[in-house]
Image 1 (cartoon, helix red, strand yellow):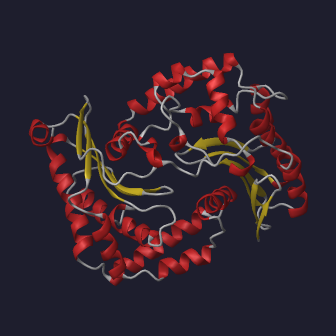
Image 2 (cartoon, one colour):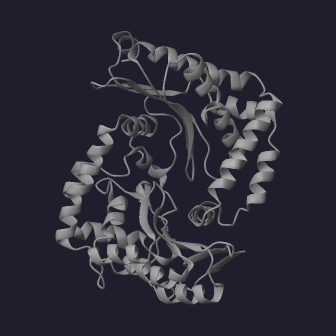
Image 3 (cartoon, one colour):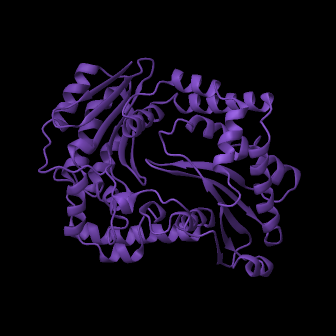
Length: 422
């Protein structure tokens, strides 16, 4: 059973009761991520996420860790380009204590100077960890190639320079600008009592007030999705065993009417072990151990990216195979048998992902954040079932433009490739 409530101060509350379960997932989502950072604020959204766990007016960092372990639950947070979420998952009998802990972190974190300076070094090490992982780092490099200096093209973690220049005053200014009632969503899924839980939400969030008005979803011109990729090809030499590749195409914004067609198209192209790319590049030709495609969708735009890692001598062959499979989707209609198998795969993945309270809580918050309403599972399944081969072909022609794709390569780049594209 789903319910939405908007508190007097603008906090949006989305709830789904799942009485057959014994757990509850509680999430507090702030409608702010790295895309709202201006020059000099790179990594601020993610850094605030870290600082929320470093102690409050009521609890030390150690007490926070001890309390969540004592509840037998899980507490964590994450930052995306457009949102920051703090969540806890516990048994239903521990909801009250867990909510008290989560609300304390959200409202009363101290942001102590010593903690801030120490956490800077931790985040810098996190940045270095990404740079040491080729699969992670190539996606970071590729985003910059596609979006240039647009905030979504920058790393969510920021840079060592932006971390070193940060101070408590500028960080808290950023927090006060975006952490506001009207930009906050409380999402809860699991076994709970509606009246009791709403009383708690009112207690922890109902009296929260901020001066002035701020709506981070109103993007300015410099924040709007760019019309074209900033770089078509970029080669990054690094002494690795493989060349890591990202081949990027256009995508769709989160609420686009054709988004379900895009999900099916992406699944056919590279969304699993039965996908065309996996079967052609890995199984038939043995050119890569890992190859997949994925969609990234945002408020006003998106991308479709194919990732692969291969030996230096096969880089151009892999790129050619990726383009070949993209052309097939543009020129020929998908066979009904392959389409039905893909629809079943997609629906199965969706349903399995929503069997737990954490998955349901995430969906509740994202539906509210991006759609402003609850999208039912039945609605999604019907939309997937209606997709035709012609719709996939038409969308492929729109997105998989062979003149617009972007290639990013990291590793021991062959001289032939460097001479051709470098």
